Image (cartoon, rainbow, N blue to C red; front, side):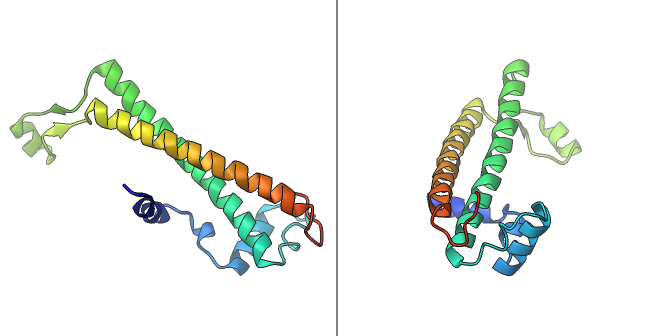
Length: 148
């Protein structure tokens, strides 16, 4: 899967709060963050709001890919423990249970998916780190000042 098709694939799993208008996004932030915090009020420029959206999306992606990592690690652990890599079931059993004859995934597919997720996790970790650095640098120059 190339980068652009991966991005469009990810769009379908993006939570609703990441797809809403700026006004609604600010309201969601306001309801989520401590009421005494002036941070949301200080998101008064497109640049500030965009950076907070980037951090929010990167954080969401980090949790999503970590969940994927855990899932595929479970597939791998079960496959190793039970030695059930891509087994086939009988034709009659497949018809009886209304399923296909293949059961489980080949070990190579699981390992390939684990490698892909590891790359995605590393990418989103770097992205979040860069956003945090940018947020810390920019926050020093923003008026009114904002504590990241």
